[in-house]
Image (cartoon, rainbow, N blue to C red; front, top):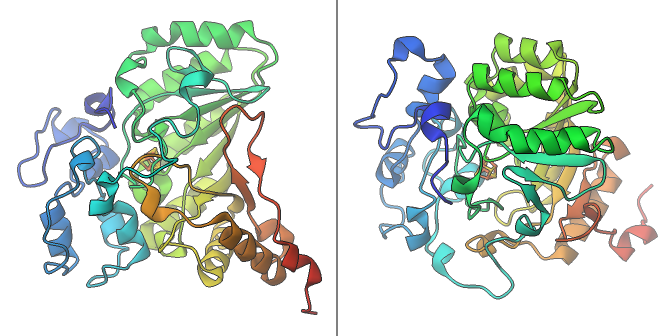
Length: 363
Ligand code: SF4
C-alpha cells in the first residue's frame, strides 16, 4: 500500500507506540483520534501483548514495508492471548508467505484502474459511483484488496474533489454514492461533513453508502456527533461494516455497532478467509452475532486475488458447501450472499450453491 495520502490529517498517525509523533495536541483531538495514534505498530509489541513472544522470530515479509502492522488496542483486547491461530490475530499478522508470487494473484485484483472515471472516483456498476476518500485505515488487514492501490494519486483536500463532484452532478443516473478507501471514517468529522454537504446538494443522489471497518476495529469512532451527522443529512445513510468473525463483535465494538444500527441501516460484508472463518460454526456464529446487533449479513466475498493474500484463499467449492450448510441451519435472511468481484462484470457475481444442497435430507 502506498502510504495513505491524508493519514496525518485523518488519523494523526504515529510511527511507533513507544515514541509517538504527536502532530496535534491531545487536547485538540477526538478520543478516537488519540486511540488511533496509540494503535500497535510493531510486531514485537503485538507479540508481547499477546504472550506470543516465542512466535515466528523471523523478519517481516518485504511487502510489509509498504503495508506495515497496524492494530488498534481495542482490537488487540479481542484477540485470545497465547494463540497464534486466533482468527483475529491471523488477519493482522504478516506471514512470510506474503512475499511469494502466486499465479493469478495481482496488484489490481478487482479492476479498480479500469473503473476509474477521474481523480478519486470509480464506477463499476450502473446507478452507483464510488469515491476513494482516503488511503488511511485503522487496521491493516493482510488480505486487503486495495493494499496496492495508488492512494497518493487521489484527492486530498475538499477542493481536489471538485472534478469528482462535477462528474457525479453531471450524471443523473447515479442515485447512490459509496464512500470507500482506505476507510472513510478515518476522516475527521469536519472534513467528512463538508464532503457529505456537497453530496447532499446533488439532487439526483438518494443514498450515501459508507464502507467502513472502524465500528469493528476502532469503536471509539462511533460518536454521537458522527451518528447525528449521518442521520441529519438529506441522503439516506447506509453503513456497510466489515466483520469476519463473531469474536470481533465483542465488548466496546458490540456497544458501538448497536448504537449505530438503531438509527442507521447497517449491513455487514465479510470475506471468506482460510483459518479465520472457513467453517460452518464460525459463519453461523457470525450471522447470529450480527443479527443480535441489528446488522444483516449482506455479503460473503470470495477472496479477491490480490498479491500477498494467497494464504487466505478458500477454494470456491468449499465456500459453496459452507453456504449450503448455512441454508440448512439459518433463516434465509441470515445467510449472506456468496459473491465474487469479477473485473468488468456489471455487478457482484453470485456464486451458485453446491448441487449437493439440492438433495437435502434434513427435515
Ligand atoms: S480496513 Fe478495509 S481497506 Fe483498510 S486494510 Fe482492512 S480491508 Fe483494507
